[in-house]
Length: 159
Ligand SMILES: [Zn+2]
Image (cartoon, rainbow, N blue to C red; front, side, top):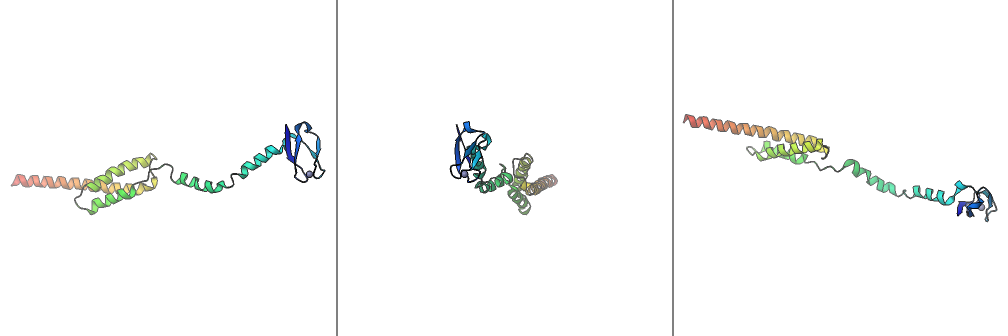
């Protein structure tokens, strides 16, 4: 088996049979004597030098790969905006129960998903505010509906 290494003087690649390890080899180019040692194997050290140089174009791909992995690690997109809109709609739109109930149900589901790390925690505050609005308004509507029902019942009993 032959080993290859660059001449210490002129860097010409010398190919020497490994039976000459420990001896000196004269460079055909510059006549410099090179001591042939096992660990000066050029073919190995060259391929080792080549590998760190090949990932050089990778800093570009490395720039792209960590950013999505740190900002969006398989999280579901949060519905904070939607839940907040439902919460606001439940207040703005008098006597419509649906947005408040939806904000409450969706908000509760999503808060659980955020706590479990399934959903994007960035939407936590929006989700929470929307959910509380929906919850308060739903309870308010239920109480007012109950109050109307009781008042009607009293009015019916008195009539
Ligand atoms: Zn030489």
